[in-house]
Length: 85
Image 1 (cartoon, rainbow, N blue to C red):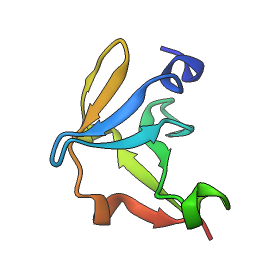
Image 2 (cartoon, one colour):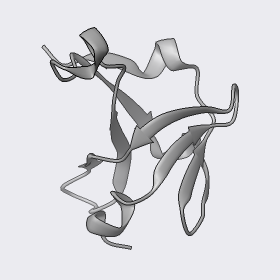
Image 3 (cartoon, rainbow, N blue to C red):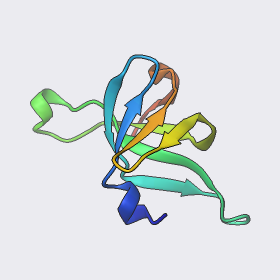
Image 4 (cartoon, rainbow, N blue to C red):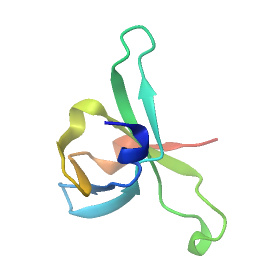
């Protein structure tokens, strides 16, 4: 599957059924070529007007299912939410 196809899929956390957003990037191990994690934008700043200041870095092992429209993950949000700064 290509990154452009992943970007069209919405990420859902199975722990609380929360919609996290869509995939914006991947972390790839350059030696093995394997995907280590997907990156999803975190919660918006003020009313979504000023972009994002954090992102979810979701390890590949936390991905439970990739469907035609969604990607289901099982994460604890506070552990995966990282600051962009």
